[in-house]
Image (cartoon, rainbow, N blue to C red; front, side, top):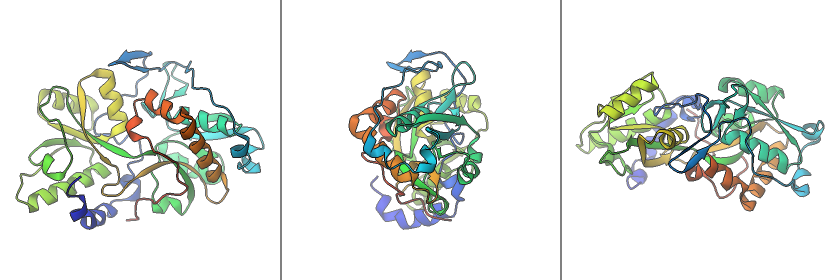
Length: 328
């Protein structure tokens, strides 16, 4: 985005003042565009198939002995990889239409990672706020639940990145708005955003720049209910929503009522990484990174992301403990 360099220092200072939990935009539930997490049967929408049945027919993965050798003895002793997921936001993770089987992108990543390491995935549903204690205590050997890397989290956990943290501007499907790339593009727009979220902080920074340049202010709109948010957008009372791209992209593909008009990094103006989280210092993150890079190289990773409509969030290589969003 063209104005990012000129405002980067001020924006970093503003965003760093937000609490780390919110600035990471990690909770899949913090979605201004609305979560469509209710179980539903498989369906083909706009050419994209979303399989929400317990029978997933996941892509086959071949174990790599070299990569598997990196797994610490304590992790591979029982032959399982215990992974925490939060099945409350499609397409990341959601309960299948049997109301008990977790499915979704994060679940597929968990299974592929385990199989590449010669282990069996043991996916355990948990609420998002409970993963830190579970990983730190050893209850879970990894968390794959849309966790963004932050410098504060790196003090307690090790990470292997597997996706970019992206926010999406979405408009009504027949809206004349076609592109949002820079602060000036949102001037005067009526935008739905989650209160207290990182996306709100970014929008506030953009709005501050616009006001400084004499442009019309953003008209912020807040809704606690997804139905009310959707109605506001469809009726024209709002022009745009801004929230985590993953869930908004899924919703757009399912109902065809909205369209993506702009993407930005979840840590704007910094890059934000979504990563597998592991216990600090136990050595498993290195094995996870190697396995993820094998999955990227053999094409399985790309197939998984495309299956769940998330190819825009793909990364070229997994990084071990990549730069995290700054502390407040």
